[in-house]
Amino acid sequence: MRVDLFDYDLPKELIAQYPLPQRDRSRLMVLNRSDESIRHTLFYRIGEHLRPGDLLVINDTKVIPARLFGRKARTGGRVEMLLLREVKPRIWEVLIKPVKKLYPGVIIEFGGGELEAKFLGRSPSGVFTVSLRYEGELREILDRIGKPPLPPYIKREPDDRDRERYQCIYAEKNGSVAAPTAGLHFTEELLEELQRMGIEIARITLHVGLGTFQPVKVKVVERHKMHSEFFHVPKEAAQAIGETRSRGGRIIAVGTTSVRTLETVADERGNVAPASGYTDLFIYPGYRFKVVDGMVTNFHLPRSTLLMLVCAFAGREFVMKAYKEAVERRYRFYSYGDAMLIL
Image 1 (cartoon, one colour):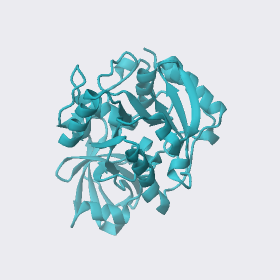
Image 2 (cartoon, rainbow, N blue to C red):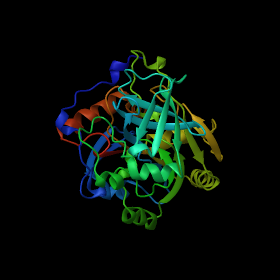
Image 3 (cartoon, rainbow, N blue to C red):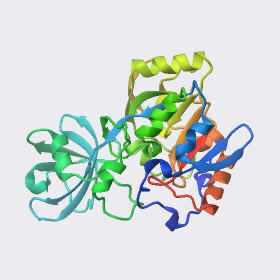
Image 4 (cartoon, helix red, strand yellow):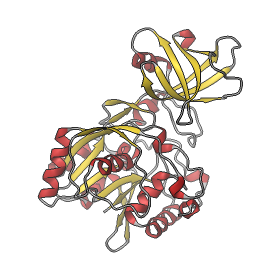
């Protein structure tokens, strides 16, 4: 399958650079797979399209301030580093720029030396590895000297508001280097309202890493290789999913990360058991979904694995038609943009 089948034209001005003042006031496009209808509403009215007995599955991962700016200890050259994941104690996979004149042994200082990274080289997965030296708790240091890792299509420096808004209100488990952006639209009040309607909520975790946002560089979809990301499905979530399915309720995954996690752990009959581990599941058209009945998602980049997953769920032609309509109606795209509900 050709990657260019998932391409579309997007005016740059439709790429959201800032979040809206209120999380749940974003627009919501509702896609119905049964009749391929498209409706337009606002996110805070999402409950009108759900029903008692449905289960929302949310990803409670928390974005760490993983973007660091430092200097080479010997030359003073500026370096930007993005922490991806810890593969061994104090050994991290990272993205670094510029990589010119970086060789094993080079020391990079951050926060005036509060954190040091020794460059080790390229990892088997194609990114870079460093060893970190610091005193105390790394999370506390990152809170002081790190910045939110906004994606590159947001053409500005992160500010204080991003520490709150580039984070779901239910974020709890530290470990992501990008937000599961479908969840950014929920407020405490909206979740409480949905629960009063009889809609239940289950929490799972997938720490968003390179696997989710890595660009597809091949021309044929099947040749793309996903990087693995850590997930955890607790007993309570697995039980809630089983009970929902037994009574005929729908499993609505909030975000592609929740979709991939659930589809990773589900058996062929759609049963979900508690599990932890790493997933490199790549979902593209032709995939048979086992447990997910609906999803909440944002509008994704052309040629991305995220768009391919959405097309696998709702049909490529239908999704690309919806994206064309979103452009015509001036929806806001990507992380801080508007949302889509697919049922």
